Image (cartoon, rainbow, N blue to C red; front, side):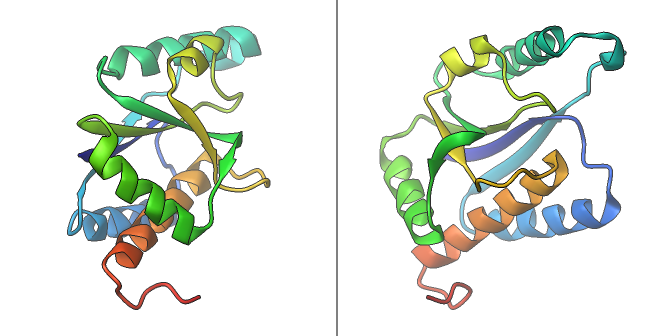
Length: 157
């Protein structure tokens, strides 16, 4: 299984980019992991919220393969502790498709079509974070889950 973090827009903050890249390299020691950022929409300010979600959704859906297991990172999704998330990933390694896609939407979230395609939704917190922070938090939690599964001393209970 390969894990992919798919998102709209790039990480502009160089500090976040550096942290994300550091965790990406560490994660690849344990499991295949990649990050794909699709370009922001052009002239998004001239689009309604609904039209922006629709166009972003089309970009995201076009990128997916039919066999992908898609998890939307969404504030209304299921929440996991770090230990529970590691267990979730362990189960998915045996049951999920070849690619497990965690998806970050645009500033207004996901279109109805993306929700329909998704296999499940997951929340990182009840709080709201910038999309750049979501990427950073997700890769840290993915790394943490990998170290938990390997009984390494990164995570403390």
